[in-house]
Image (cartoon, rainbow, N blue to C red; front, side, top):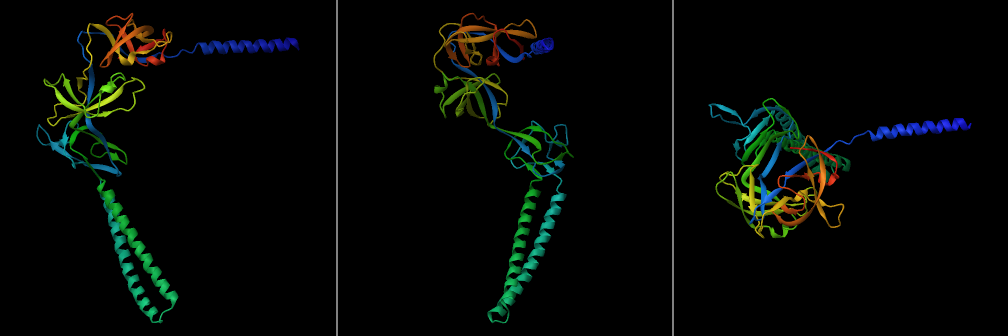
Length: 372
């Protein structure tokens, strides 16, 4: 019995050891991360921010009626003739961009109209009958049941007429939805349908952008967010234009982004001449202190709490020795913030790369995969 028990225990230990070795052989895939270069800020640098130009409004235009696309809005072709409207074309508000086959919806409308005509005829007949019975009932020449029956018939036909009118209204709306119209004037960003495409409710047909005004969107750290006020006038510059443009702060995020830990700010810029295009990079300044001497700086999103020092900060650096690189914790002392960058002193070199996304999910020594 003892030998049997010992054999069972030994077998269990062997299986456990095999399971442990199997679990320990499972390798966690390297975490994909983005990196940025440690930069040397020159003296007299001000708090400049990098911003993205986005449309004031951009919407996906979806169909609401089922059917085949039987026509698409035509525009002049520079080479002669006409062509289907496509990305890069300007369209006016109310333009019918695409039309779904209407015959089924026309048939339903005609059926509803025929039902209404039939209901109105029955209502008129019921009204004449009710008037006659009501007159006889007033002279006690008709019984109460006759009167109640005529009244009920009139109410029933009246309800039928109301229902038919509602069906006509619904059929007209469905027929109108066969036309996909531009809700505002703007540039067509994308076209997803062609002649003969089968579409249904929520099928995205086109994407339209309003760039009569554009927005410069940028992030501000908490140390500088107090300098931004709604309606504040800001000067925006771009490499694409040889002159600055003016804008005003139109929106400030009430909470910081959990990944980058910065507040999103939008600056609305008039763009009647369509000089600013969606996707352009712009820069602007909030003023404030200027750097007195050159200093190394890293993106604000690269800074994390140092697990080895109370109230200390650090960054994760990587080497560029291959596809998979090792992350290394580098303690730093932080200085002033200049736009999206913050001065970091201690062990960093100009040109060294620091992790900016996913930095809170890794430990020093972990393997990571750098995404271009």
